[in-house]
Length: 545
Ligand code: N01
Image (tube, rainbow, N blue to C red; front, side, top):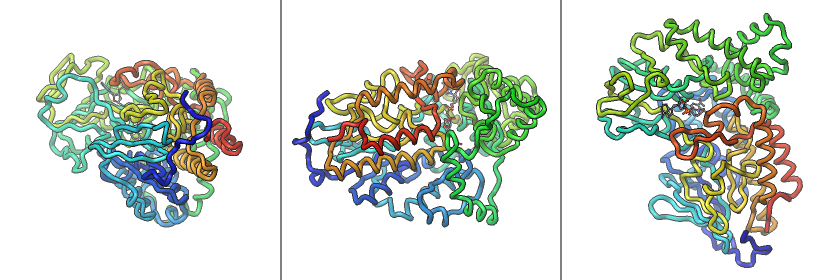
């Protein structure tokens, strides 16, 4: 590896345009900018959209909303923001979340350092100057010592590989690239393809106004009720008074959610107690059923089956036509082993006369036609087709940028067998590149993870600057050690046995047909302990010069 022991050739920081380029103005990019500015650094954020918010900017499909409690899913770093912002619902809708991101950006005057409509297409490290040159679509480029990838975990939308998509004469849109002007479904014949978290939120909303809605489902998912409600002024005051305690609690839980895994094993309680508990969790808000269940639900097949059977019965009880109910019940994976979508009267939608479910397991889509969709069994005509077909998750947003590190090493090549990182933040042979919410970082309640990662990266940049270092790179040994730890943590988890974006699968993307460990499955407290240890030890795991 072409790394020098000293850095006689590195360009002085003053000769570079910026100290740090941050890519992305979602929650990660906004907070990273805020923190780096506090250090007095020259920062430029490059954002492909025309506004801030990232996920909450792009995903403006009908029904898009938080499915973690709003007050646990915003920023915690600013007392002023906590004091001034009132959430209107326990699970805020996309328009409110986008307004919140703008509120934070405006409050701290962040937009003056953000360049909008700037889609980054390349990022090349220069071994001589110890700097990154970041290229934007349209020929502009920027040079900076450091580069922070704040590009999101689920931000590279993927379309199915059906023939004829371009031929469709009606309106079509992907949920993750929804047009700002919206789509009117009133009196329209609508198709939704895909029943993940996005599809389920969209379906329950579109079914309210479409003349006819046809849902094309490949594999069903386990969904549980969200139980959303408005937040009264009095309730907001109580939430505000409890913020410190709430965030401290989130710091202690496995994935930083409000919900705490029950310490009891499924079969350690009587049958009566077990079902009373499951009823209670099903009636509780948000991720209670998923993140607050018996401790062995996601590691023990028999325990998992109990919950799956319970939720299957709920679906049968809510859907009138039992043939349809059976199609909606997953048979290929246990409860919670894929991401659990949260719903509001989703199953009841299938009792409406204007809604039809087409199982693509029985009758696959053969092609998109100018008039609609042709399956193995029938030809359908539509005015609108909604693609709720998900994302090239985790590493997909990296793959879409030509990233080359030391010696011209391509990141895509380094990750050809799956991502390898040091604490999800750094990659060997990619000096001075940091990732927020990168592969193998602790995720879950993402804003909590974002805040922690941003602060860790900020401290490291500050450390290198104070020590007049211009090169910060994880060693291959450190990456190897973290990778081994992540792989070990994934063992024994039922989610590791299932195909989903969480195991690196996307059938629409070349080369993503094999399961890989793309997520860190340990706990957030364990993760932070390791990262804190690295910082306290003076970053011995890194090559700093
Ligand atoms: O994407 P998905 P998503 N032919 O990958 C189907 C977060 N999120 O956008 O399962 C037919 O989950 C695919 O079928 P199958 C959340 O973390 C959060 O819904 O592959 N079908 C599946 O049904 C979530 O997990 C919120 O068989 C095809 C669907 O499309 C993540 O984003 C809200 C197909 C894709 O589901 C991704 O969710 C929304 C094909 N060729 C999302 N290709 C919150 O509430 C794909 N499908 C915060």
